[in-house]
Length: 246
Ligand SMILES: [Zn+2]
Ligand SMILES: [Zn+2]
Image (cartoon, rainbow, N blue to C red; front, side, top):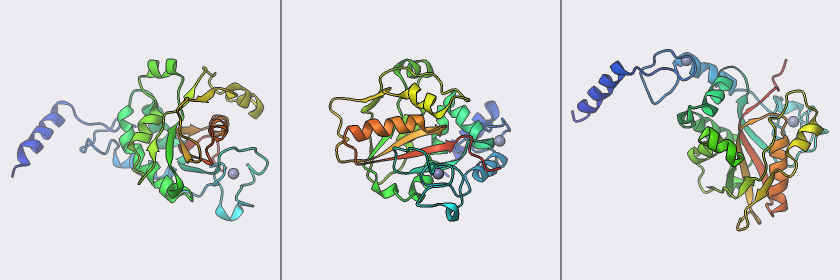
C-alpha cells in the first residue's frame, strides 16, 4: 500500500500535464516510455534488417565479399567496423531530430537500442573506451549538450569507460548533401585533435555518434585516434543516413 501515494501523485501530475509521445504528441500513460505504441512499433521496424558491418549500409549478410558490401568495396574506411541501430528514416529519424533539438531526455529511450546494436556487433566485447564524436565548443554551447556524449553516458557496457580526450579543434561546415566524398573529407580534414594526456595508446576505441552520413567525420576521428596510438577504432551510431535499399 505504500506505493499508493506515489501513484496518486503520478495520476495527479498526469491530469495536470498529460504525458505525450515524443514523436507524434499522442497522449501516453507511461512517462518512462516516451513514445506511444504506434511509434514504438515503427521505431522497431526501422531498427530491423541486416547491414554491412564495414560501412553500416543496408546489406544482406550473404551479399558481403571479404566483409564488405558492394557499396563500400572501393571506399577507404579508417574505422574497423560499425554497429547501427537502424536506417535514418521514419520514426528513428524523427526521434533523432527531437533528441538533437531540445529533447535530451530521449537518450534514455535511445540508449537501450544502441546497447543492443553494440552487443549484436562482432566487436562489442572488444571495446576499452567509448569516445563520443565531439562538437566544436561553440556549437555545444549553443545547443547546451553534445547528444553523442549523452548517449554514451547511458550505454551499459561491462567495462568500457568514456573518454572525452578527442576534441574538435576547429569548426566545420555542415556536410552539404550534394558534396562529393572528397569535398566532405576536405571539410573535416584536421578538424580533430587529442588532448595531451590522452590514453588512447594500445586501446580499442568505439566512437559514438547519432548519425553516419557520408562517414567522413567518423573516418577523420578514426584516423586521429589511430595516429594517437589506438589499435582498433569502431563506430556505434543510431542511424545510417541515405542508405535505404530501394
Ligand atoms: Zn507516437
Ligand atoms: Zn559496406
